[in-house]
Length: 101
Image 1: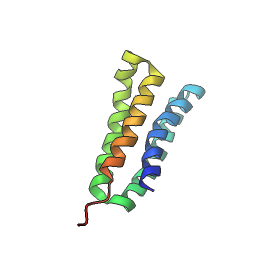
Image 2: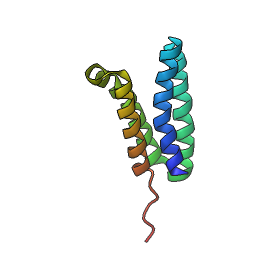
Image 3: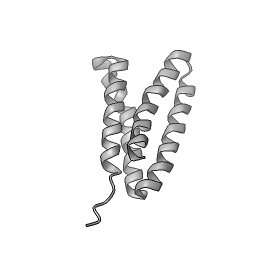
Image 4: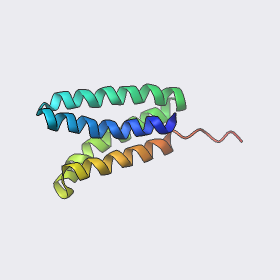
């Protein structure tokens, strides 16, 4: 389940951008981002608790914000791909089950 939530987080960034670009409606793309972030937040909370959820949500937000200046350097879709992949990997690591040994 943790893997699916992390993939959902990364995918949400790509789908949100795709919706905004395809429709020309940035608020609609933002609504996709908010819905995905909220869904991931609920799932992360259930899987890992409060602190990993807050950190993962911060990573999600930082990825969204960071994709804009990165896009000026490498292009829009490559930027989205980089931040989506990084978000998935980082959130997966953050929400890892605690060592119970």
